[in-house]
Amino acid sequence: MTDPLHSGWRRRPSPPHRQRQQADDGGVFTGSDQPAQSHPVFDQTDVLADSFGRFHTYLRISLTERCNLRCTYCMPAEGIQLRPKPEMLTFEEIVQLAELFAKLGVTKIRLTGGEPLIRNDIEHLVGRLSRIDGISSLAITTNGLLLPRKIDDLKAAGVTLFNISLDTLKAERFRSITRRDGLETVLQAIRVTLDAGYEPVKVNCVVQKGVNDDELPSFVEMTREEPLEIRFIEYMPFGGNDWTERYFVSYKEMVMNVRGAYPQLERRVDATNHTSKSWAVPGYVGSVGFISSMSDNFCGSCNRLRLTADGNLKVCLFGHNESVSGTLCVRACRRASSCLSSIPLSTEKKPRMTAWLRSLRLRIAR
Image 1 (cartoon, rainbow, N blue to C red):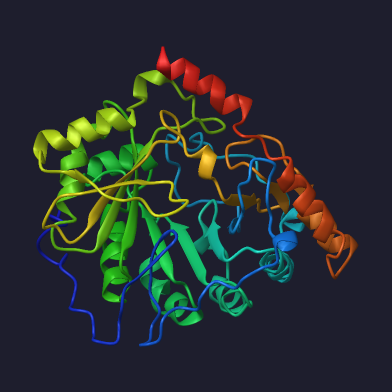
Image 2: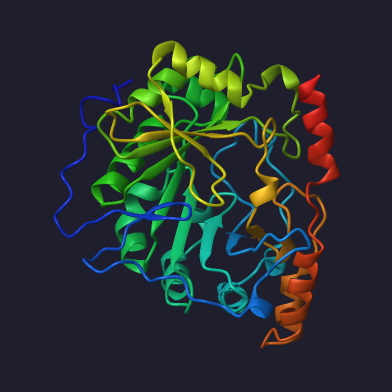
């Protein structure tokens, strides 16, 4: 395997007009000398708030249930039962709902999947979403396999931030985890995203004991000369992944692991509403984050809502029950006016923490 830290890895210097701006969930590529659009001010009655005083300004939209990988921690080898295409949100419906959420105070949208880049003409959807008044950040989470061929169009359409999933730097291990080939393509995706001027590029790594926890120092080394934010994520249960504690590595264990190779690793200040606990090696260009969804969750500062590919709203990313059917809402009323009341009411009922997550925390704490 080609060493990702040497030949072909180092990016070209960014041209002078590219700048870095810190936002509520990381840097944003603005593409000009002008600062990114400031967040609009909303009347208190228009903000999506719950009974615990959390204000929701961040919407994750799943574009598809399909994926071109079969990661062992995400889905069974045979895949999942897909809903019929007519039940999926159309681009027009996604834009209508995004406009509605923007009116209610959402300022950031993240497109997810499945694998969102599988969706045909995603560049056109991005272009429409990026022009919505009030939306100042438009991010994509991707496995990177299709990104090298789409990066230029997505950048032109208005994507401000990329998260690229990568759990190993070893080809055979990549094949074992994802049940597919493609490591070199994902490394290429990281390179071309850096070359396109995105700073930072976030790399998501799900850590599993005995699977890839020996590679944490190698990932950290990638931050020496590149504006990468390596994010180590605690292994979590998903439908069909046969989650078990024996693969679980806690936040504290991961920090100890990294400090074994980098004793100078130091804590940094976390951004508001940030899910990742920020660390860095002094003198390194990039940073390291730890997402401790299980051992030390961030429920108390959660500002996120999730829209599923078939149009259901989930007020908790880890909840199993949908709150509002956005598909039915939009299709029943083309102006989606009925959602103006139903969405805030559902958000208001968001629990402090789901009973499901609370029970899992108790299990791993034993």
